[in-house]
Image (cartoon, rainbow, N blue to C red; front, side, top):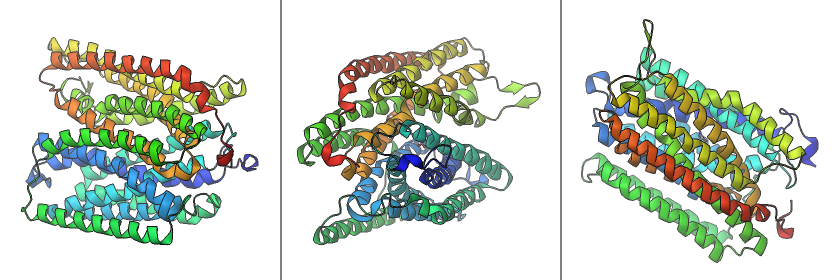
Length: 496
Ligand code: GLN
């Protein structure tokens, strides 16, 4: 059994492969993302695109939303066409190509680079996360701890990305920083290839392949959609098609949410689920609701918290001014530091049969994260009186948000891998990653209502987010009392 394989910090050897691949992929993603809005709004003489702040933040929201939205087709492709291993490999190559295109110092090719990163991440992100779960037997209680470790890799990668790309941007320029993201993804790919044998048979083949005729049709549709994308991109680039990013962002938020519900419903209608499978998927639905709300609040980090740090926080320490962007790294730093404690906590509770349900933990994460906004409510009120606030306020909120993240995010990944039928492991991870997408787009829209010139309006909105998040969290908690038992249902057809 796989339980005897514990060569990577007590976890299966395959986790090493996935840990480092995802670490480098996230290095490239967050390293570039940290600079994205700055690059788009920078003046042409500074090498930027000189786009307005409103458009740049809308493009940022659309980009981060699209990256995670594409996890849905990406997960489906792994299950039905190519398997998780190949999806991760080709996804990584496409991401690397995207960053190479961004490294070209020409503004014309910028959006092509972004589109490639979107497509590649859609293939890689859900499938690499699903493969982590496939390293464990159904009854292996190392699963939560394994995901916590994997999540630590995600955040180690982000820290490296922020440091390397931030430093290169300041010292050498935008396109060197984007080039570094390509190099990072490249290291990840080499590492993946070299350590692939450790994954053994995990997702080497699609879990539920289409018939040859069906596969042919699917590829034809995929190629047609890609061709359409090329045409639309071309028309936009030569100015025939004019796109208003702000107007689109609002519609996309609704569209993504609708697709989430429709896809979930379709699985119930057409997924040929057994009774236990259906009940487990309802338990997972609850986790997805908590996750969407969680990210809508949490992702204020890159938007309104960022502006709060820049305009309303006293960043002078003696003669030194703390750079605004450093505050963003606090989340990853806290996460890496706190992860081992949480991993140990889940393992110890598990040994005593006291490990809380997935529904409970995600409700708890949402409530903790939302409560963190009380800190921002108070800080904004101080700022409204005309004073700049101490950096400790942001440090405190990032700490609370990270504790919430550790209760919800790695746990939810684990929940998806445990509760979804194996034959749809990739696409259910895609559905879950869609909750990131919804959260990111909604977060951007909410941040649009927050102007650091009006801190008292910010205070009001932060208080509303607190009420809303805590309210949803309590409702999820109540339902979790019911789904707790459903999470444990086994399914004969699904035993590994
Ligand atoms: N930091 C996590 C990741 O990169 C979660 C991202 C998100 O926006 N949900 O996987």
